[in-house]
Image (cartoon, rainbow, N blue to C red; front, top):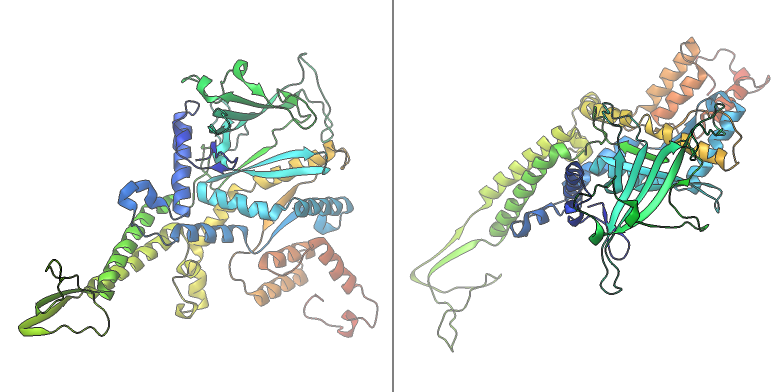
Length: 518
C-alpha cells in the first residue's frame, strides 16, 4: 500500500509496509483499507482470498461505481471563479485570468480528475504546492494518501483543524543488484517560530501584520535496519538521518520556506465529523460487491454446464485404446453419432433453470447495489431510458444521488479555496502578484443532472425581468444549468452592451420585449 516504492522508483501498494515499525496501529488500519479498496477497483479483490479466489469472477462493478460517482461529483465542467469577476471588477478579472492560465499550464483539470478519483476510491487525496523558480509559477502535485501522515493537534475535536506538522513518508526497498539498503524517506513540513531568537517577526506580502511563524522543510532518509521497533514516524531520531539537498545545493534540514502556512492540502471524500480522514464511496458496498462476485462466479459455472451439458450414456459402443484396452475419453462435438444398443440410453443434466435463478439473483444484487451506493439504475446502466415511465419519475430517482453529490461537494467547499489562496500567495512570494489581501477564488463544479435548458432560461429571464434576480446571478444560474458560458463577467458585459445598443439595433426593433435581450 501507499508507504512503499518499487525498485524502479514508482509508488506501489504492497502489504509489507503495513508491518513496519514506524507505523502506528491506526495508520496500519488505514493503509490496509487503502489496499483492499484498490484491489476492488482493479478487479483483484479475489487475490486477497489466496487460492480460494483463483476462479472468482469480478466484472468491474467497483470501478463503475467509482467512475460514476466521480463523474457526477465533478459535473460537466470545472472552472476557476474569483469573487467580483462577474461584476467586471478589473482586479478580480485579471486575477481570474491569471489563475486560469496557471490551471492550464499546470494541467490542473487532469490532475484534479486523478486526485478526485483517488478521493472517491480511497476516501482521501492530497495536493502539494511549491514555487518553481525555473517555471516562474507554483507547481502542483497530487499525492497518494498512503504517503500522508499528518500530526494532528492534541485533543483535536474538529476534522477541519489544520495540522501544523505534516509528514510525507514511504519506504524504498533494498536493491540486491546495486547493494542499496532499504530506506525510509520522510519529507516534513512544519510551522515554527522564525529563527532562533524569540520574538523575531516577518511581514509577508499577503498580510499587513507581522508574523512570528514560518514553515520549515526537512527531507531525510534512514536505513530500515537501523530503525528501532519503538520508532514512530513523528519521533525518528535525526542523529541517524541523512539529509538531502535541493537544486541550489541547500541542505534540506529545517529549510525556511518563507511561508506562514504548510503548502499541503488534504481533501476528504466525505464529512466525517471529528475524523480527519474521509470515507470511500465503496466502503458501504463492500459486502455487496463480494456477494455479487460470488453470484457471478456461480452463474459462470452454471452457464458452462448449460452450454456443454453433462451427458450420461449406457449401451453405447465407445472407442477403445488399442494398446491398453481402456475406453477413450468421449468429447461432445457437433455431428457426433453414438451407436446405442437395444437398451441403450442417453441422458443429459439440464442446469438452465438454475442458471436463470442465478441471473435473477445477480439482478437483485445489482438493484440493492444501486440503493446502497445511491447511484440510480439509469446511472449504473441497469435501466434503459425507454423503461423509464416519465421524466418526473426519472427526476425522482435522482434524489439519493443529488443528496450524495451535495454532501461530497460540501466536504470540498473549504479545500479548493484554500488551495487557490496558497497559489496566489506563492505568486506574491515570487513577485508576480502585488502585495495585499487576495480575493477569494474557488473551483466550481458544473451541473451533474439532466437539465431542461429552456425551462432554466425562462426562469432566469422572468426573474431578471421582475427584478427578483440580478443579471449577475441570472448568468451564474445559466452556467450552473449547463449553458456554454465561458466567462460570467464577459457575458454580463455583452448583455448590457446589447441592451444599450443605439436606435436601429436589435433591442429597439422590438419596443416591447417580453424577455431580456439575451
